[in-house]
Image (cartoon, rainbow, N blue to C red; front, side, top):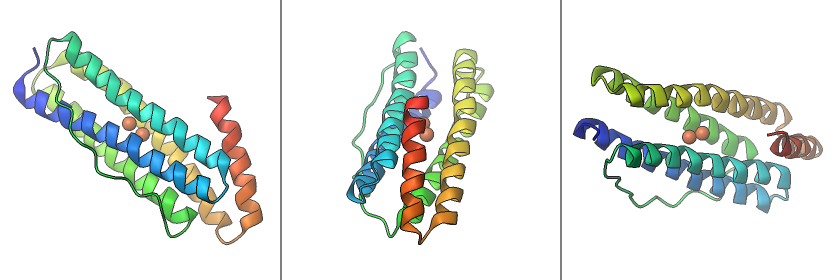
Length: 165
Ligand SMILES: [Fe+2]
Ligand SMILES: [Fe+2]
């Protein structure tokens, strides 16, 4: 079984990943409302990936015979001032997630929880990817802000990325 200090933080991280999924579904719905279906599809896909991040931690705990606590999730935003505000909030969220993962990794190291330490290396790599696409999308949206025709081009590009994996 995992040590209780680590269990508490793992349960929080599961909650955070599930909340990220919920938040991305909210962002997807916002883009649906603007008829930007490619960006909506991108965020539905991200929601699925966030659910997967939570599930991977749950699986790790179950395998180590450790009780998992699931909590309720706050209602996500489905409206934003504009597309830039939406994608900026996404980048902020990913940067916050990176900080939490790094803290959890430090805890695994101080508590000498080697299996968790190794599992979290996957999350550390994943956060590099997450921040990369979120930064790219934020920067592109910032450049196109106020130009609806270009926003449709952007939508098309991210629609293609959904299928590119
Ligand atoms: Fe995540
Ligand atoms: Fe993420």
